[in-house]
Length: 403
Image (cartoon, rainbow, N blue to C red; front, side, top):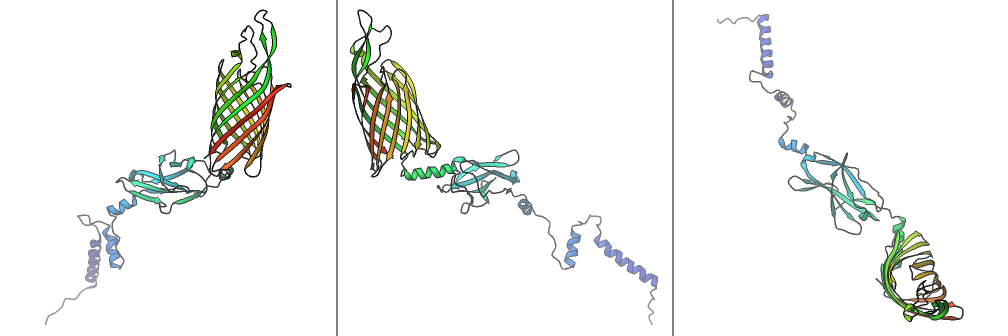
């Protein structure tokens, strides 16, 4: 008979402690330094939960991918630069950041590169492109490999920023539609003016004394001009060139003993840039600078006018013009817009042009017809005199084309 050894309580306790120590040793780093990261993985596996995987190179690159933060505006002012500020995360992964935009009037996309500012990256849409009714934009990032990534909105669906229309835009559009989209005007005019006979002085070649004489007083003028209409603060600017030739009662100068007929021949070649400025809806101001060559040499001059009323309808014009040596004129003109595309304009002018000793009064009338398709025809007529006992007629015509 085989006798089995009896286990004492002490032996049983030691065995239990040895088993616990063995299990603890399996979870404790051994001599080779078993990674502690495996412990939670094994525990999770024993508990039936998915094991957490260590981070890979691909996940690290995704974490380092460039990102952009910015606050997109909803509304902006017309005719002012639209500044877009952005913060780029991981800019070392970016070759360029691009602001891509288009206007309501043009479907072409334009690109502006972001530049480093004091605190953020900044890109600006030029003021000339910020117009009513809206402007749309998106942001793209160009990676180091040259690929482009839309990071805010897309070219198919860009972010739209509303641009409210300002008063000057409303006014420009209304005038532009009223003028049928025709901003440029070219015109040619001619005029013959006769004052009859006017007084001047001559010097007696023997005694040197002055005595009054009457001479023929007339001239003709030919002029061509071009006008462009921005229809904004500067409503118009134009350039006129012309020639004037005539016979006038030129006053004699001290020490001048010339009494030949050549003394009374006058002439003028001139150029005159003019600008018209909008002050208010019914108030406009014109300024003019004249450069000219007369029979006695180079001369300069200036002119100005105030327009009260509709600049392309019924209005009152009060103005002046003065040229060295040649003379000065003051004038008023009342344009009255009538039916059948007719405009009637009575005029009053006070002038000593050209080279006259005294001022004369001119009473004129002008009728202009809008012939359609941009063409216009004007006729001018009147009467003027420097002396109550003598005077003469005026006749002239103007042909214009607006496009």
